Length: 319
Image (tube, rainbow, N blue to C red; front, top):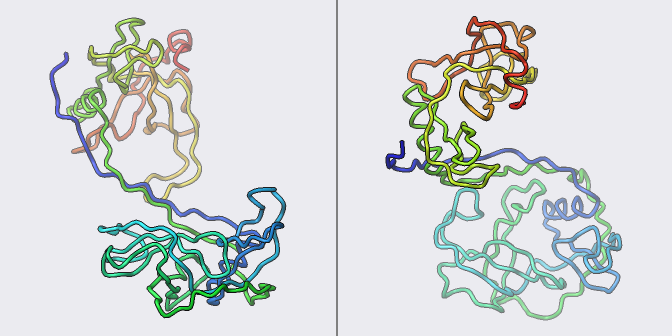
């Protein structure tokens, strides 16, 4: 069965909070931004790095000599951003710029607020526009703005003890990825079959294994798979784990069981939740069947089918 199907596409978002602690240099840098004091670090060779790092990129020596640099600087290179995305510094079109702050030897990446690309050039003098509310993050710099009146004289970085009250010791950054996912020909057919309450895999023409979900190619033989084979709906629990931590936004009471299930006729086990049986009675070899919720496009969970347990030799190759 190789009928042509329109490949599925769907927008997806992966988002999670990323929490990290800060060492003494990064702590001083972010606390300095909160206090409107831009800081860098001096290397053994006398170069000033902004943003600062804790180890010399050339010698790997530990760096601790903090210095204050200017809040004005020079654009070293730039790129125009005509369509800002969610979470970027400005909601209107802006330029991404690398700015070498006065007194620094390296450049800092941030946004430049200008009306259009004609207002940007390499060598443009700019200054920091500080955020109205600052909490110790790179967003304490709201953006850069043109500062044609700022003198281009060399700014001598001044030693700074970074003796701030209530230093920032950790940050939480929201990591987010927006993208469009296409499952491809094989998994499109698989998902459409699930919507019809059927489970369809693809058979390898070389080793004859049936892969569910199908991948479009046999991972063992490396050849394309096109022959579709309906499997299940019943299967065998090959292995399992007991989940004791409740997931956010998942309306399932803990503890519950998640298992690998070898559907009848499949050459690969898939995973699914086991319900309809106490969690401590789930076992390897348990025979199960799918349970579909009303309007569901895939099985909500699997429950015991009432059949005798499968013999170990029938599923040992699928562990």
